[in-house]
Length: 405
Image 1 (cartoon, rainbow, N blue to C red):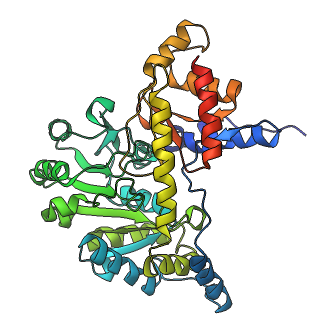
Image 2 (spheres, helix red, strand yellow):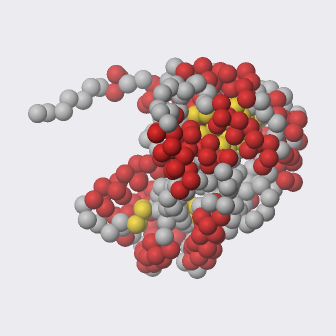
Image 3 (cartoon, one colour):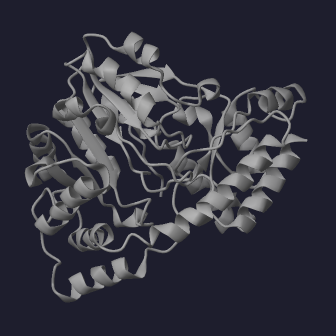
């Protein structure tokens, strides 16, 4: 039986303009090799290696037993929305009403809904690079133009006020901020956010989206600040995006949430009503338990991430042609391997002087899966997740070191 393939003209321009998530593609390839018996160590996926805390799982089981298995309001069950409002109030100092909050199927859907709700063809979305892989493609699906600003290791992977000012045009609709950052772990301090806020306050036509998904994966112990802490006057045009995936090791439960101006949140709800409808009812009750219960469950995870983080950064900085910064949050290292890649290419170890060729070299020859920096808008770098065991990290870094010899 042959597989028929229709011509690409059958597919929409929209889907042909974007690519598959590189992180998921590499993770899938690594999983295939592992299933074939190869000793693959996967450092690509951004997923905590801890189980979901027991009290959260118990809340989900109780919800099933209580029969909470039906449709819910599109924007989320009232008790979860109240827990989100309370989280923003107690942890961040933000006052939101229930109708200014929405629950989505993971953080990715809330970003998708936001972009589809506010962007028109030709609008510009300012995205500092390195950036989370999906920001640019989601903007493209919404027929907008991603405006990428390079923020390399030389400036600590952080957007500078002068760069932001230079990037804003009359067509700018959204500026996308992500702190702690995926992939770099960079965290903006209050002074840095105030400086960016001063630029944004001069441009009232610009919306600000802040993705705080890694807020609780804090590797320094320093207080977390959001752009609204630095510039409260932006609240009328700021959308705060967050979720339970990373802090509570709930990636598969698919619960994200957003808060912002009521009319934008309502538009996002209308979109969601025509796509997924509500997020899974049982997951919502679990997320309510996560946000409302003791936050002590986060501490052992973060303690482990801190230990692994220091080990990984120290190892990378001892490798020839590699430079790696300490991160402020999240569970990634984002080494600059440009010198190492050039050297490997000159020695005919890799086919091209690119991070993609380097990542393929590590996977095919040394059984280590990493994500090339170009997936995040930063050629010559690569990302590893240290959300895996110390044993895995030691062996993987031994292999990477050997690959660089």
